Image (cartoon, rainbow, N blue to C red):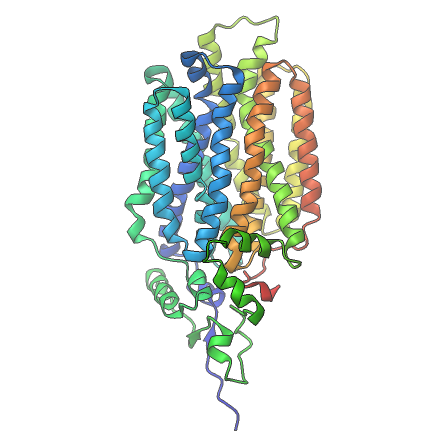
Length: 490
């Protein structure tokens, strides 16, 4: 007689059963605060440059370097925290990144000189690199049926952070100065530390580490909070471990299938060569095309996003210096910077709502290509002199589109990688984008201040075009596709 097949279910099937309820709402709130805090710390760069330059008599290059050094820290942080997260757990990253970000952010308000400020803002960037882990962590709690829509809604937290920072800067800098803005902006990161003990580990990650009992505990808690019931049977974590002696392996046992020749690599990620091994796997034959195209796409999207953000303040400030019709006083120009950045920050809200509607209906790839093409069109007129109102409108529309494209890419990338590489793959790709973030301030600010606006715009147009081509060559569409848990499922 054959063996009786025991009922079993996967994490995807468990998430489908419990749905999106109170439990995920709390996960959403925690991750969302961290995501908004990251946006606030990065948006500061649009406001503190000019007052610091005036107070310390800095050159334009030194002013731009303050922004670039944060992105350099982000690059290091996203790679490091991604590898640590996939090796030792999502939660463990939260406490360290919160301490670094809030601590260095607060101390930077007391910087006695330029060098100390640069060092502390670099550390802030390193801490902010944990934002990619928060994104992946939340993704792993969302049911497949509406994953794209919920990840788009989650990205609204970033937009709320940018709007909050623009509002805070508008009020604080004229009255209290840039130091107060740095100090106040560091407090949201502190909330991540305060509520750390309430956060659950990702059940999907726990399963990849053969901690099925711990994963079951999280899923049972999720079912109780959502007032739902888990499927009958046992949670499948590792086919080799649980079914290697059973010839009748259930068809649903696809959560983790780890080949023997990959076990050594899995274990070695905990060694001192973790990054090298992770990079080796990201560039393996199964993933090399996706990884390289994602790197190009993240570079282009983030280069264009921060270029548009910085163009908003640069056009309000630097472009007027190139005009013979400069009639405004410094105070009026300064007010225009806050107003224009504040207005264009609101562009992210309709951009993300549009993304939420499109991303599950027409797919990730087509949505990103459509948004990139639209951003390309809106930027063209800015290469030539325009009225202030039309300039702000075009920047608003361009930011709407590039926000939707960038967020669509952030949804696609973690879906593209298996759980065993999700945070490190997404973090590394995002880190490649931060190289664009390092270069973008130097280009946007320097070219506009040097009265080379058309050159800056056409450079951004070329980058956007290259990014759209890279997205078109992505090997697969992830909309409606189950998350994989190991490379062997590819």
